[in-house]
Structures are given as C-alpha cells and as structure tokens.
Length: 119
Image 1 (spheres, rainbow, N blue to C red):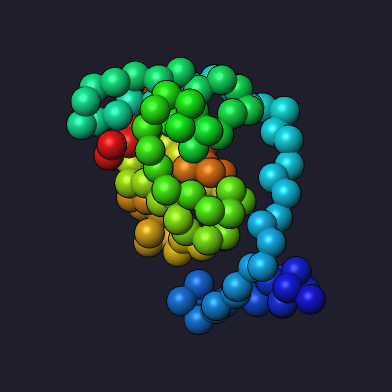
Image 2 (cartoon, rainbow, N blue to C red):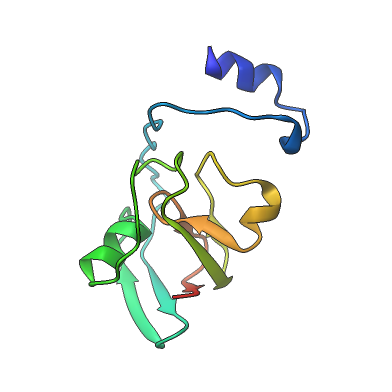
C-alpha cells in the first residue's frame, strides 16, 4: 500500500507528504559501488570505505560513535552533516532541503572519491 501511495504522489511537493515506514526497505546491491575516502573535518582523519560498505559501519568499525537504530534509512537516528563531496542519498526521511547538508550514514554513499563529514 505504501508503494502505491508513493507512486500516486510522486509529483507532489515533498513538504505535502508524510510517510512512516515500519521496516526499512532492503537496499539493492549496487554494481557501480566503489571505494572512497571519508574525511572527518574536526580531526582531519581519513578513513577508507570499501566498495559496498556503509558509512555507518565504517565509522563504527573505526571507533567513531554515531547513534543508529533501523539501519535502513527510515528512522533518522544516524544523521550526519556533510561538508564537501557528493553524497548518494538512499534514505527515506530527509527532505531535499535537508539533503543539502545532511545524510543518513546507514544508507548513504559517496559519488566522489572523497566525502567530508562534520565529525
């Protein structure tokens, strides 16, 4: 039913819609996934993200604590501000305006070789 609603309202302005997901949708495998580097602006730390890995998993594996809950881009708990680069947004909670500076670390990736986070 939610998918039908999304299709029916695809041309509506985002601020006119409110959808709540009870389970995160599965992220499809991306054949064009490639590794990239996260830059943590506050410390200058650079962390390699392997192809197909999530930003959240990579940060947590490197001792960077980022709150998380659903792991699927629907709850908004793992929001992180980004400063430079081109994030690939695959969440279902951020508005277009919010995506200009924020990403959901559990599902976002980078279209560039480097992505700078406000961490």
